[in-house]
Amino acid sequence: MNGKQRIAEQSRQWLWKAFLELLTEREFNKITIAEIAQRAQLDRRTFYRSFKNKECLIKWYFKKMLAQYHQVLYQQPQPLSVEAGLRLFLNFWLVRKDTVRLLINNHLSFYFLDIWTKEAIENYHLFDETWRTHGTPVEITYLEIFITGGLWQIINVWLAKEQPEEPQQIIEIFVKSLNKLALTVTENQNHEKSE
Image (cartoon, rainbow, N blue to C red; front, side):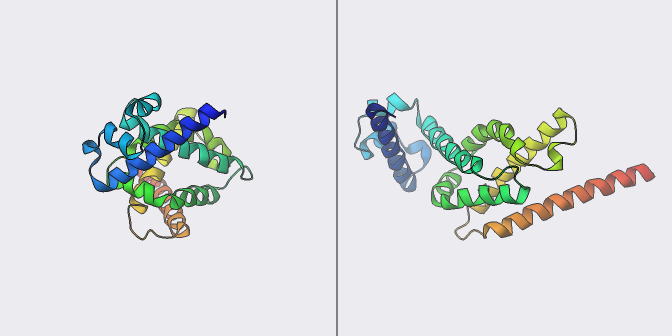
């Protein structure tokens, strides 16, 4: 990263910090770009050099967080178990809980799901689980989308709390729920066959 790029990145960081400060004071739709720039002590043109609008600023943050998450993910011994992957994912977001909670409480976390769904599916190959290898490509894709959306909804409920549970408790609940779901599906299939 050259000097110009570093300055641009620093400006984006200041704009993000200013945006979060404003978001604690008022609703998203009442925050203007001029206010963000002013709070960051930057010119409005500086905002527009990096972002088209406020939504792009939020997407920038989530893309940045996703890149950081992938750095951590790729450093792990591969393949990962579901439990190890969940622990990594939950701990990553728990460290950022204050920012994520602020975005959740302002109904802005959905921007992450749009970005993450595609990238998560591209990275599920890092997990060595039977659900990744049994089924048609279409079945596996839908299962991956189901898991991705479910995980992000868990984050939305979990980190919206002032005192979220420990990650291990969430992992146990998630794995237990998946096992119950699998058992229910198997029981229903067996019941249908016996009729």
